[in-house]
Image (cartoon, rainbow, N blue to C red; front, side, top):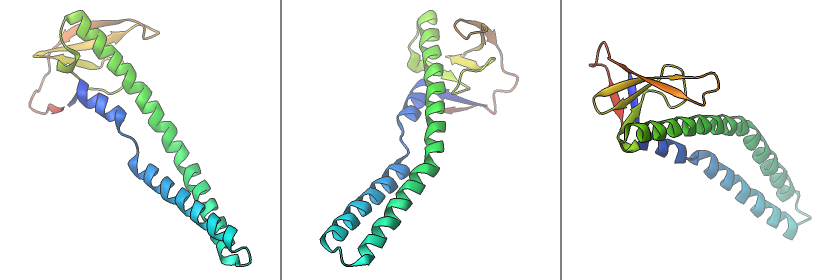
Length: 148
């Protein structure tokens, strides 16, 4: 079982998809350069062909990765909900949120929150607007890992 620290979850939300950004910038730069070269040499069809290839490549790349972007937004929203819960638990237990660990990055029924040596099971109402904490004990603590 893996427990994620509050700071780990915050940092995961800040991490952009760097590869997507770099490739998109390269394709945009290629479109701009080939567009400029085509504008200067309108009689040379190779620049027009390059411009068309780069525009279609950029459109294809963005179209394929848009689905991944939507999934990343969904994960970010779920992680933000989990962070809100951890702040609420920290406030109710009068501890710093940075000392809490969660075994899930998304709100789920039965997720565990670790505060020091105590571990709580979280139960939600139907709307996930309120929660109840119940103290639990792990059967086997030897396979617990922590991501800080």
